[in-house]
Length: 379
Image: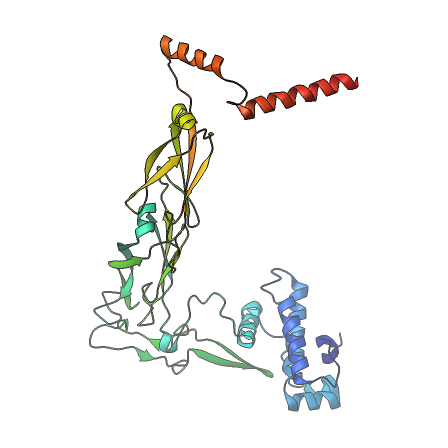
């Protein structure tokens, strides 16, 4: 079976630029990469064909030879066609990684000498609304990986040190050539670290880090909300073999308050008042998170559900001098378990009441009657 024209494989013209060819290859490689098409033999064949075409045309000398002689220019050498063996998927994934700069499945960021950055950590901390109002300094005990104090993070036993990997000469990568391919792969001997340890530290087993419980002091500013995230740089897991540590992220959640509900910087509170206070007016004190009492004056004839606003009595705004408000909603409480005398007084009061005393209920029932009278008149 004859090979397809390389330019046709990449979908470019013979006069295309290097940038246009690279862009076309990148798009096709991502589309037909084996990792994106597991078990698809047709996609695997197409990916190999795309790779073969690009490896030839991306080289100026090979492209010139191909333009002049076509596939015959490589009849005796092959341009990386058949013969990859059973590990084709792994082989091609290294090409893909080298071209796109990916580090699939490699864990954290890796520096020189195999010193890998430690993982970031998360700590969930629950605080009260009062603590969110005032702010606090919290002492946290966190089990985490720290640099081994015996080997100072090198992973080697005291008196020894890691040796340069003889396979990759400390590069962490090895180059393999097949046909016109020149491919870099992770060194199988040192696994990309560039160093090997013949005599590992007995305290950490060669990892350069051990697990310990640490106590950290964390400043929680006033005004934090539920879900606020605090980042402590360098307080995460220690890196392998002396690598830089990760970060610690503290996620805050607020406990429910028995009296106040929060909405941003504003606080809300429901306060029951007696029927007499609602009718005649009065006043009451309500405590605030600031530690002082606020006076609420109830005017005569206050209805249940009436809301009073106390400016500046809410929550502080994070990283600002602004302060929210406190909203007090009164709920008129109907008296229960009345004595005989209390019932008599209420009945006398009801007889003395007029429509002016209950404007809302009187108006409502008047509108209801008018509505049904209108329906009966229309039939």
